[in-house]
Length: 546
Image (cartoon, rainbow, N blue to C red):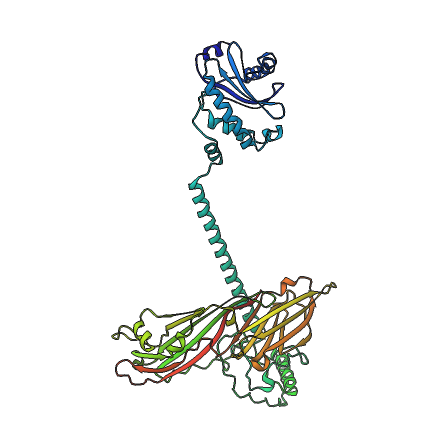
């Protein structure tokens, strides 16, 4: 009691409590040094004083302290224990503020809600009363704001952290896509190497059945390509009117003495394979190992002063139903000066036709190109006429891009269905969506998820299976308006439809989406015409159905 008597002259709040009518404390906060036994004794004395006190007042006093209280729901009391010298009017205002704050913080006035929000109530008591028991000038809204601990710095930190996480996820997605593309390229290259397919693999349109050297591979033929093919994964445009190679002569048997060594078995195998090829009227099989006779011929030097390449690369992502999710076409007009006279030239194009390309189109000239002159006359020439184009190095003088789903030339949808017997039925269809294009050397690569041989039910075109890589190649020499749709149906062991994705498509074409045309190539000095060679090529950069 000496401690409380010492504080009797101070005007402070000793404790704030929420208790039951029996004096059991649910939440209690002391604002001066007071041991637990003492506060429990003061709270235990409160019900007795309440029964003996004046019912018309909301406070009772003892010799040392004053109890100021307000009844709450469920036989609970909000109680302030103050010194007798404390300002009772100010204490009543504090009590009313706390009475409004308790249900706002606890969300109710039941014992369960008081217990669940005990710490929040203690923090709220501390917002109203400081250490030592003195009242702060606060309102309900300011208490609510302080309890929320809303921080602008924290929001900025979280926003920066979220942006970093989003950037990391985007980078991860790009890296995963890059890794997948590299895997597909390596898989196609391995497939070509294992089957002895040379870099010219592609199959000329003028060959027998449009598929010279495929060795059948269709639905009614055998399922193997012959090894004298050009690489179906190549994205460079090849000539499709080359004459078919002459049929090999039948092997001649020459009587010789017996020879020792491993060459005898190899010779017998080669002779047998050559005889089989001659019997089936097929091209001779070539070794997958490079030989001196198979060395590539040196590239002929260009004969024209200038070379112009108009190139478009298509990036398409489709869903499994064949819907176009994204399509972007990037085009470039590149100029290569082969001789000194072509270093200072201007390339005239049909600027009026390009000006009509507005929706989803963007065009940009090289920074060193005289753009005002191009906008006025449609001639692409350098700003600085003292410096010309570099010799034997291509320079992109004009670029364009197109972003719309109608730019995709072909769509593919894949429908795997589980038979329920450990086998999958797979139906794949393609549709040429741009009738103005003719696609050559089309290869639709389908992962199988197994090395088992697929059972082909029906097919338009030809196929090749690589069991080691678990890939099925669906090949077409050409897809145009006369073969705008096609399908492939097969069954194979498996149970998961996800293994058949992503389906990757490769092709090449000379039909550009951009209506650009080269109208003239002339010297910027005197306007005299300069000879040039022109080529157009369209290839997919990324073309997948996933």
